[in-house]
Image (cartoon, rainbow, N blue to C red):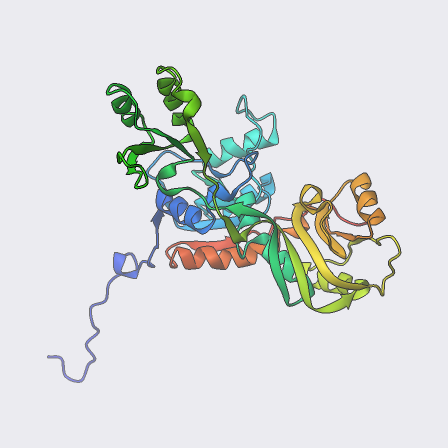
Length: 372
């Protein structure tokens, strides 16, 4: 008889799967696909080593992604300790070729420990430098509102069909040559009537890739005189107006160099910077235009018409050249010019992955240089 006793409902035990927290997972290849869509690797410099650098044997699921500017052994231990499945290192930890994987060198140990702990490693590096709303746009906002344009623009990533050249020639090719041209990979042949020609003759356009160009010319050379009549048109990709290396920032309101130093410190969260005043300039001189390049910026900034150069590092002689030309220079150390961007990148990646992967920023990552 139950009487007035409460009946306790039957609840699942704590060990039941119904009590387990929801785990969001995404396949590594899907994560990589999203990262490439966010910062296309084709934007990276040709000398760079970007993309997926370390891949555990598939299938590999990603639940937690750790962002860092530099993947040091301390950061790797942090990733392992938090149970991360993937590390995005802004700088590629594998840059030069590794001839062996041993415990004798710290970069080799990184790869070994990453694989032992099933950690994937990815690096976007200069793809994020060039990216619209990437690291250089973030750095360019240090002095406040401005109109920002790339110093060196990138071009569109590809031509339709991947064609780089057009070969134009008359239709007087043999019946054997034209089919061979049409059979080449990465080519397209079109015949156009010449309306002004009373005999309604035609000319032929062969669109082709760079690799197919030499093959097509070799085939056309088999007919005497035909190769010399060929007109070659090199296709140029249009520039991407908001994408490229460095930024030239025209400020909405000019500031003094002294105020610029204070704003850069606040933007980067630094107590100290290095400053070189341009020839004839003082701390009260006005800054109307600033040129920025995250990391090591001399190759991008050299000769750019700006009152102030802001970058991570430049050599002694590069600073002397800039100062002699009237440009003041602020140096904040290489990775200090990039690290603050990771918080913005975290938000961009989390949005792209639609919350399926937890994205966190390293607390162990720091610039190796301190002012003491």
